[in-house]
Image (tube, rainbow, N blue to C red):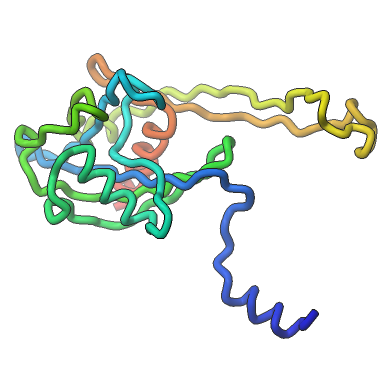
Length: 204
């Protein structure tokens, strides 16, 4: 092994999360409604296999050879049925690493189109709605926690680890946020991304 070559190789690498099973990207769309900035949300189609009837941002899985940014823009165009040049990308927010071993990269963009003229793809989106940014600045989300535990598996080689089945596996806590706006429940990762955006806005 050439230690100098190893050193140079590691220097050139960008650290990334281990064991990531899926890569996703979303766009938080800002729209102007009645002279005020709003965040646009989608209510996902009830016919979708994944998360039917839930509230989300435009987004989806990163395809082979595609960057996170490209995926976020492509998915927004496909779901909202708008043109790419109607999206003004403002930048990237923090990305999220899920306990289920996938990452979600989150981008912020301004939609340069009247919301009344946006007719989303009915195969993926039931309808869209907008929430004033002021609502989130004036209303903190409800916060709840779920416990994460290691489940026993008869195929696992317990005999190879100290104390076997009595090994003290770590437990975790998964924090879940909820925003209640009119008849809508914005929760989970969508609420977490919204909350992070609000923290940035409050700083300025």
